[in-house]
Image (tube, rainbow, N blue to C red; front, side):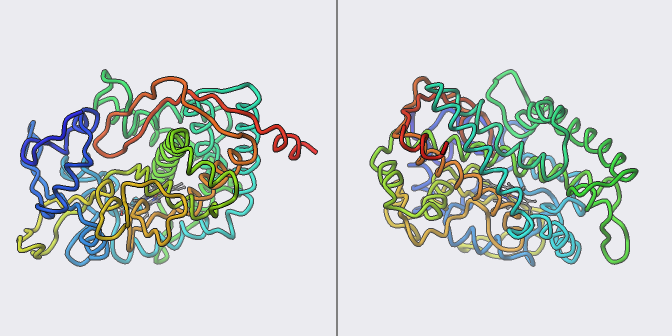
Length: 411
Ligand code: HEM
C-alpha cells in the first residue's frame, strides 16, 4: 500500500481507508498540518481534520463553540444533519442531552449491569470453549458477532428469533465488506432498524417488562413523557453504538494477539493486568476512526478561523497514535500505563457503553487466556469499507487448547 500526499487524499471516501496505509499520513498531518482542510470532492463538502490528541480533546470538551446537533459522523455531517437531532442522545446537546443521559446512565451503570455482565461472561466462555474444542472457527462470524448483539438484545429485551435479522441490518447500517453495497443500502438498513423498534415500542407500551425499552417508555424529561420516536431513536443508538464497535474491537484483538506472540505470552502468564490490557486493545483498534462536530460560534485553532456551519472532524485513528502523548505509540503494549486513549471519545458525549464494552473485551481476554495456549490466523481477513469504522468482518483462526485450563473449569 502507498503513503499518499496530503492534498490528494479524501478522508470522506471509504475507499481511501481500504486502499492506503495511513500511519505515515497521520504522522505527517500531526507534525506539519494539525489543522488540515479536506477539500470538497465527489459532490461532498470540505471539512477540517484534527489529528493531534490535545486538539481532539479540546474540541470534544468545547460544547460552547461546537455542536453535535447537526450530526456527529461524516455521513450525517456531510448530508447536512441527523434526523435524530435533539432527540437521540449522541446528537443532542445542552439541557436535554443532560437529562436524557441521566435516564440512559441509570440502565448502563456498572451496578445495574451486574447481571448482564455475568451473562456476557458465561456466553463468552462457552463460545470460546466450543471453538477451542472444535479446533478453530471464523472468530468474527461465530463469536465476535454474537457477544455484543446478545448483550444489547438482552438489555433491550429483543426476542431470540429477531437477533439474526437485526445483526444483518447493523452489519450494513454503518459499514460493509461488500463493494456492491452502497450508502442507499445502508440508509435502508438504518430505516428498517427504526421500523423494527417502532413495533417493539408499541408492544411494550401495552405490556411493559423489566427491559430498557420499557424503562424508556415510562421516562419523562421536564414532566413530558418520551415520545415513541424518542424511545425508538435511542434504542437505535444503543444497538448501533454498541454492536459493531465492540465486535470490531474484539476481532482486532484476536487478530493482533495472533501475531504479537510476546504480548500474548505476557497475558497468558499473568504478567499484565487484564484491565490494563483491555485499554491497550481499545487504543490499538480505535474502531471509530473519527467523530465530528459543527462550528456554532466563530473560534480559532492553530491560527485558523473556524466559521459557523463548518465541519470539524476528530480522528481517533491519529490521536491514539500521537507521540506527544503516548510513548512508542506504534508498539502494541498490553502493560501500557498511563493509557488515556480516545477510543470512547471525551467530554460530555463520552461513550455511555464504555463499561459494557470493557466487560466484553475483558471476558474475551480471560477466556482466551484460560482455554488456549495460543492461536493463529489461518486465512485472509476481509476488511470493511467505511470512512467511520475500521476493522475486519471475517477472521479464520485455529486455537491451540490449554487442556488443564479446559479441565479445571469443567470441574
Ligand atoms: C468498543 C466499543 C465502543 C466504542 C469504541 C465506542 C465509542 C464511542 C464514542 C467515541 C462515543 C462519543 C461520540 C461523540 O462524542 O460524538 C460514543 C458515544 C456513545 N456510545 Fe459508544 N462505543 C462503544 C461501545 C458502546 C456500547 C456497548 C454502547 C451501548 C450499549 C454504546 C453507546 C453509546 C452511546 C449511547 C453514546 C452517546 C453518548 C452521548 O452522546 O452522551 N457504545 N461511543
